[in-house]
Image 1 (cartoon, one colour):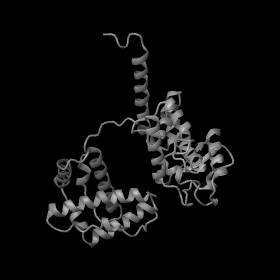
Image 2: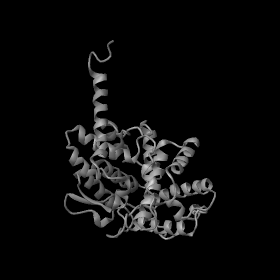
Image 3: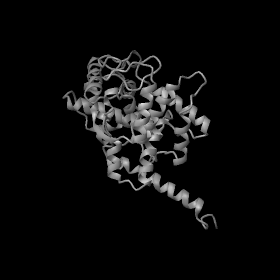
Image 4: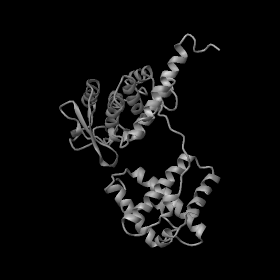
Length: 325
């Protein structure tokens, strides 16, 4: 992490908590960053959720929150917090994520022997609709890859387009998360056709590199004016530092506008497209699970919904009797 793992950001200081909770939060933050290898953004999101919860509980209980007080919370206390979020108009997905963060913190307290609270295990989060990943159509993906080879502005160096194409092809050709692609170092690119990637939770998986992906990376390396070290970042910005996800997100915004693609056409949509197109071509669900690095098969099974939706769409547009009453 760029920021010290032992210092909670100033805008996240838990004023509503006493020393016992603040110290537990610091240790939890360190564990998330070092042992679970959570990104800085992820750690801060967890902290924001938990500290907002602590703020509510301080007002709810009428005192600063201690670890001892957290162990005594009842199911009704947790439900009051959830009800307040509903009243404030938070989305169900946001509240579900916040509850997950709070559960993680309570689990940490329990595992470290700091305190146990069984009541949180009985709290149910909001029911969420089954999310269907939004993949690009085959033609949209082809158009996108063709368009990214062109500079986004007249004064843009040619190597930038080559770099962005290589990144997007890693997302679509290998199913990488954007963080996984941008965390690659030059030395991670192998001489053979298999790429080892470190994903969520520090888990590694091996992926085949398509010739078109390898070629795009080689073109980028041949044009990149920066001096790249084997143990340094593969993808860099104009100043030589590791490329930020925001740069690729902005590139996708430009491409969406140029091609008339929907707002759902994000870098992560290319990972969805990778899985959806593999499944549509007869790919095995278990194999796709391994390629994506999903811990649970149920996560990968969402793509069967996408494939079914595409089949229905093709049927409704193509079958001669589909639109007859």
